[in-house]
Length: 139
Image 1: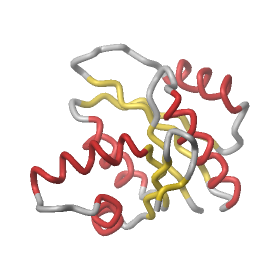
Image 2 (image 1 turned 45 degrees about the vertical axis):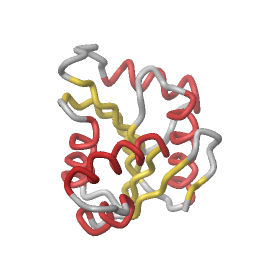
Image 3 (image 1 turned 90 degrees about the vertical axis):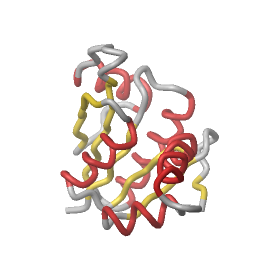
């Protein structure tokens, strides 16, 4: 079974809404399960629950068949997302272009001129799809 993971902010930002919409479309197109992931940073301590996340997502896009809602605690959003993607053995990760930029900055500290998509595909063995705030897929 194919699995699509989409990290989102809570409450949903404009960018998260666009990324979520594209992830839902991709999951439906590929007959895949969908994991909607929110990283609740330890240092912010917002205590977002799965119920909160599900309610927010369903108010935006309606009920999603075969969706799983996950809230993870972490210090770094990017690292926590990569751990979830690896743990779940995701096939596709749909991220916002802002998130891709943050990953690029993090990887820049480790490597010279990283290609975030290629790095994630090699390290996590999954397809990475980046979405703009307008909901357009960026190649």
